[in-house]
Length: 411
Image 1 (cartoon, helix red, strand yellow):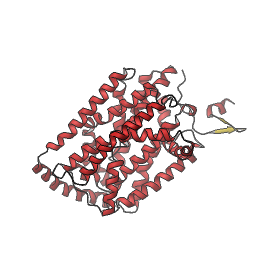
Image 2 (tube, rainbow, N blue to C red):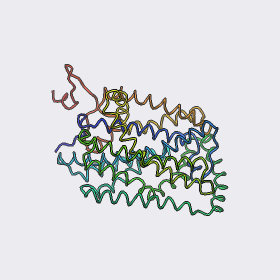
Image 3 (cartoon, rainbow, N blue to C red):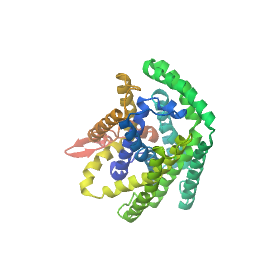
Image 4 (tube, helix red, strand yellow):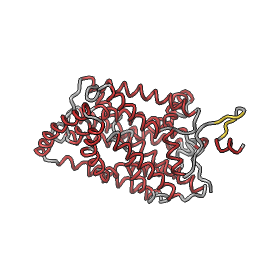
């Protein structure tokens, strides 16, 4: 049977809107890591010296942004996995071979992004973890949820082990970290690209690759929750499942209140001590789970209201080109930061403004692009390599009717 990508009328606008919203949140989280030595600071648990305004922004980020959006993206990846497999199976494809090829291509794209541009790439991690999803396709909902909750308990159990770190060893690590931080700032500000790349290959990338096994228990549970939602058909028939969405909204809202308060208390120093940064990581991570589902369910409910549909539709364009826009965020941000010598010289407030301006530009660019093309450039390449044949790209119109490129050639 001929291999073709998902047609436009099969797309779920609600998922594209949520994906576009998640892309904004991920951009907000990533921007400080673009313009400051965040990798070394986090690796050695070094304090962040911020102005009063930036401290308020950091508090807002930690309470409502940090860990809330990669979880949404992970959930959507699992849901997208189910939709991809289900549709490919109906068309008679070898679904396991097709999805494995899709993951291999994503891994290569992620590896290029990781090595040549930025340490914070998530694509390679999603691709590797995605292979584990193949073990759960068509498994029962009980098995899927059991593994999801079990892995979450395992992950936060491992994360909590940081609270047992000896204060003396932490202080020694921070002393070393202060020297490493100065080196990172020097390399990022003054080195040539080849020197910068060599530094990253020797310092950043080995640590990132070594930590993959520890990251899988954080990512896979969200994949499984998305797979569960796909098997239940929640997003495929939102009208019928509106009550379910409202229940998720209410439960996630109620759960997020005490966790947000706890996170605020930890962040502001009410639980002071040597292990305070590690406790902060645990609490912010826990707070991200209910807020992830609160944000998604809120968007779904808002999409049901005509007043909001116009504004949220713009998010869907960005989400439809999520891979292209994710890569563009890195390219545009690093070009501006390095081009104008802004590394380690930007405040959080300035970077927040830059992030919002770039994202709005991406939203309008995506809208403009998708009126002329079916997919973003990266999406088109990914699909073409996945299916092993050229996919339709340009939108062509004949007498006011849209035709695919294949139909044009037949005529």
